[in-house]
Image (tube, rainbow, N blue to C red; front, side, top):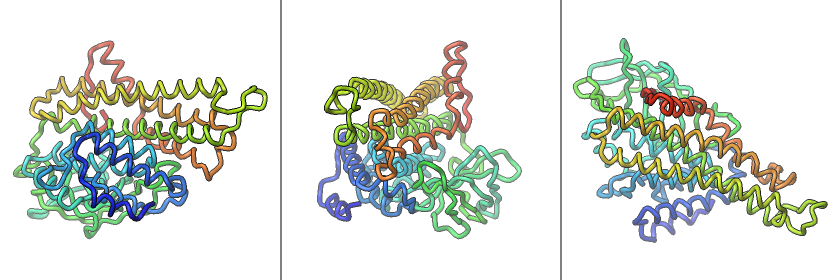
Length: 405
């Protein structure tokens, strides 16, 4: 990757509008694209890539302007993530999760908590990781005076090894109450393990973490006042928000696959010797396939943008979010999640039909797009997303807020 980019960005005016920030994300993607396939093969910890996200200012996209942030909203954040993952699915995932963990205090915490965290994060350009997997009660939180003590192990901790701060989650001893707190990633007792060895999203540092007596003050427990959680319906918007981040991953990776494949087809793919055409781009089946896949991608992107705008209305007025409004929004999110999953899997698989046998070499790295989509789309079964939509259509049933719906 370029070593001069950071200096160049520092000497230029900061992006001012949403489109300017999306353009900045495209610049970052161009840097990442230069050696994305090689870095995917190497699988090394992406310290330089995270520094690139910091130098470009993308990490402060959602932060308050008065503290050095860009003051942008979620509709822009989703588009920024889509741009970055076109070039590198792993780094785009790190950025998307960062945005969610950066916003988590606002979703769950008190105003005092989230204003403090967002100000500090913007000023210091914190990069967030998360040791959160509420499906399992694998971390116990005990009380010691005014402190909380987290102990246990998380199977996944995306981004934590390359982060400045980590969101911890555990269950308060003797209760069913989950507790979230933000701690420095170099806290004593946090050990990140190099055991992420999956076929896709290889640079996301999503391996396990041991949490051995990590301490945080009670005052940092998100949403707790006098040791009692202050519940709001807006708290439950965390799932639809992260699911739209996932949608951004899938559509961005699919878009990157199409762009990369089209470049290959124009420059390297040979026409079929019995087809009667001198160029691959004149082959009827090649033209048809690119047209078909592009139309499907554009349709999914349009739905994603529409649902993102609906979600931003809820973020703009958290107090107005009711169970009914939240449930109807989750149905829309489920629909676009299902569609994005199917479209991305199809595109990243079918590009080989129009690039040819020689495009399957390891050096080209076209397989990384499919591997990345296939790996992350297994996060939660897409059939359950379709079921949420189907039950709403047939019975008007709204999804019950859970850690996955």
